[in-house]
Length: 222
Image (cartoon, rainbow, N blue to C red; front, side):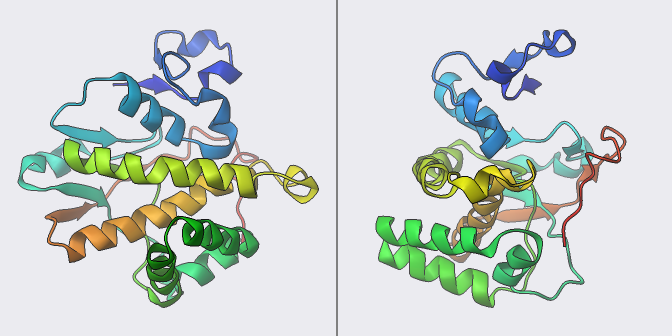
């Protein structure tokens, strides 16, 4: 169902009919830093979970006919993009964002688990299979609960450790969303681990509409 993300930051009549992410247990105020994770968190904390949970963006979404067989799979993600880059995920991030954020993120993972940090570090520096983008997914409830339980403590620590300081405050708003971009890579790492453990996975194309954005909003890096 459609949601308005970052509701606490806006009072827009145009989205007054949408479910807002600033009720109940919520992180709506963090939307400028973590993007879609405010709605994912809200759903996880405030809605009785169905057997499958899916997530789309307002301008990036799966076509219904492409996932009509979703019950045959444990998880469905967006088909990987940037297929011509031939870069490791670490170098891909370095090309488009601030690489020091990735280094700090690895330090955060090491505080949580040395093994987790080691595995993630190896994954992003050696993996050249390009990433499934945008945190788009459909997955079984049990996997969704597992992902959220792992992801949000790391996300909150990332916001605390990375999203602060004079240099950070001077960034373009797009680059202030680094916690979301880092978690996008971490989601791919987690997805890779699930595949290795035998989870049934499928990758499908998604539609991306840029006509919602003005030329200024289509800010490109790298």
